[in-house]
Image 1 (cartoon, helix red, strand yellow):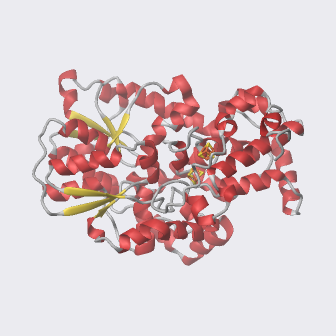
Image 2: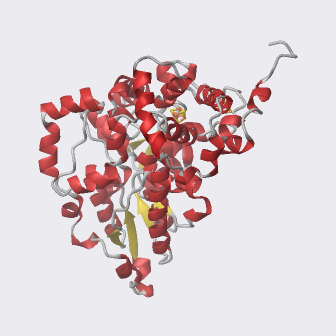
Image 3: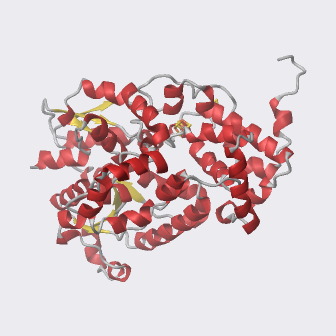
Length: 468
Ligand code: SF4
Ligand code: SF4
């Protein structure tokens, strides 16, 4: 490029300041290419590794997004309006009606640059690996959610988006009759319908027996006033278990095992009533609904936080959503509640004990990509916890497992999901004893189950085994 050519800054400055602030990281990408990491055992950008295409890298997505913002402004689209109140942006009736018209035109081949940007965003697994090593912490899932909110103000959403977005409403109801729903979900015609019409595949089976049946009376939920009436002097005995839709309804065994571990350690576990987390809404760009859900759950958890009883959740992606996406969307209204991961809580409980002598027995931890990216200390914490019980835990470097919530269940991403798994997890697991392999993420465990037809444990389940 000649030294006096028109540079990127000239184009960027045509975007109003308010919009640039709303898409701050997109504007801040400096193009240094640190995100072009092709080490298959590093979490950084699985979509780029599997596609080998720049548009599927964090840098590529940021570049497309900047150009899209510029073109939107050039076309006279009032993005500033969206930027001003992103949490309660509502479509007007004319906008809702014209979505059908625009969608039909798109289906008949009408070109729109937005579709190219959408394709690049759709390939993102929302793993968050780009939110830490990148110098500007670009965090593609954050601006992708804003893009999708805007894109679907012009075009109709696919049916699968509605199913995914409502999963936290429907699954607790389905879990009341798990055997019946599992029977239905196993039917060939349902699977064909899911695959060919809805675009979702390999539906997970609900846990049978259910969590309540497994965990027993000791961990039953109480109501909020009952929690608040717990005598102050007894509160230090309790641990609140924060439920999430994946482990509570699809992997109840791990939650029940956590309840038993808490009891073995001399504490009294109590389930908090299920309150939607909203992560699926964020991933699909339902920002207004996500803001409402996050506020409701944050208010509930803030009220409980006043009791000074530790709150602990199991699935890393959902626990870290309380810290990351909740802070982004709610700002100061998030409050100060803290939900710990199991390892974080165990570190507070086990800290005073001296480490025991290590046995020759080895365990292997394959980390969750979001957890490794947002909480780099997690693996080290598990290693210390295992050492307290005289066991050696080895941290195995892996990339993304390819499941990432619902990505691996979407028909259009199925081949890539399995390809991403083969790049790193598949290779690693071939060389390790699977009964000694551990993973903290529900997604990772379900991907291993789907591809290897083997179950790998959560580290807390290995601890329980050690205690027994
Ligand atoms: S590492 Fe971050 S700032 Fe650098 S090119 Fe990639 S996305 Fe842009
Ligand atoms: S969230 Fe993951 S898949 Fe998406 S751009 Fe970032 S690193 Fe790549």
